[in-house]
Length: 257
Length: 141
Image (cartoon, rainbow over all chains, first blue to last red; front, side, top):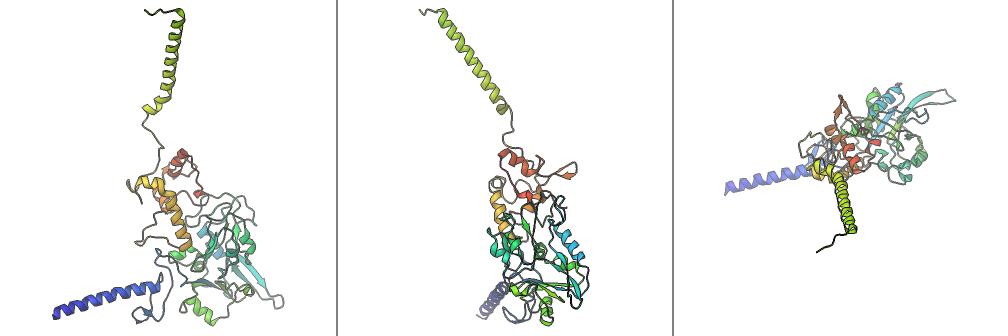
């Protein structure tokens, strides 16, 4: 009798364990669960640093963002170079300088009254409500659930309406036949393209190439996670969005502009 | 008794001539097909993973456009890049290229070369494909 009861208990605990695993798996989704467990399945904090499970669809539990600290005088061209290497940009042979694709532009701003100037890298701002997605007639311009805005070239017809709609001049159009593209960034003639926050790297659990090249002047992370490095930075620093008046709630924020 | 006139003889001669001519014409038409074993395209796919890849060969022949399209959407739109066991998706173009690409003179060949594993069959079938206007057609490494 007693042995039967103990058997039952073991069975019970086994079931609980599976249930707990199942619950925690569901709650954390594709994120890394490394938090303080209050009760089974309930976590005090959830730390989402990188995607680890690439077999499940991304969810809106995460919203990726970048903070750029322009007060650190970094040579932003290093970030541009890293971007070009990562995505195989700059292999156009016939396009002129205006036509060539650039995911990141280095912009210099100056306060005329005080003379204070700073340079900042401007790329796709990964808006929460992206105008480029609103205007796209084919659904090619898209926002992934985790907040990354990019172009599905399979559907892009090259109308360039999104380029008109973007307030940040973040998008480029490929004017010529390209060869020898990067494996992770297929790109070709007749499609619009822009910064995709290195979605291929994020899915591998890496940071975007520009962030890695920025010598600590750029912070990448999950805006929804209050304990992430980026959220902590945003909570104590007076960061700005470019054209905040448009209320697009950008995923890229700037410090010191 | 049948009386053979010069006229009927002429007709018989003509019929024999026509029959022989037809046999010769038809013969010349069918000779390559009867003699040759090469029916269908010569697909230059390297058998890297044996006879069965992600699906049996005949299914891949019929279903690969659907496979590629299905998985491109789940990867692009939802960020699904691997199967739950960590392996690549069945319709991963990257995986096709990396596994089946063939070399000529020590270099991987492009789709412009008729021996490329995609081109070899697509040219035979008369089906154009535009994957490689954007995607690379050779392995990166």
